[in-house]
Length: 314
Image (tube, rainbow, N blue to C red; front, side, top):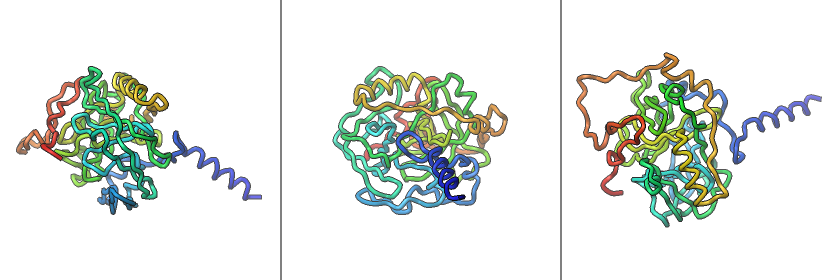
């Protein structure tokens, strides 16, 4: 008598945690703040990485996030937003004909070839964004990331919230959104997060993705253009999403980006709610070379200059 209701409950629970592409959602109680404050400092995405074969994902807290949609095999990182389209930093892109390597959650390798690429600059947009087309769709076992639903008031909604930041060393960090909205995303360091869980982004980190956890999804909100805490294009921008849709439609009209709304947990973490404030600057600290560690001076509506993290060669 108890088996049938139990089976129904299990099926219903599983169904509620599935999203587009049959990917299980992240745990609804997962909190970036709680993980950032934990005693676990092992922030590696992989415990063993092999660009030519299977990998071993870190089963600690990084395992809580499905990062299979990021191509980690080269410094020039690419992030999947549809099964055939990836986003990169325009000044640090993979070349046409290059192979991109993805690994599913079981560690199995999936190879694709970049056959086309388009930058926002080619469409008259001053943004450090490049879009690549893969030779064939990624399997459903590889995550594709949504963007935030476009809104006009993101500066009030997400400023102060924590974001998940990635880098070229395949590690995860927690930075605070310092300025979000319109077309630019700027990050800062949180005064209560340990330095080991923060990163001074530098040469080679360009194009690595920044995510916001909302509605059980890792939403792609930015890719690195500058160093220091990080800054770059903001993918919640309606203007940028329209341009992305145009490029994606021209490259392969069978696919399109998807969006996810912002949830109350993120809004409550913002500085507008009075919960968090950015770390105060140390007046005695010596500045580091701006070309590798500090973001360029950027107006809120203009993307940062990409030259700040352009490596001399790969």
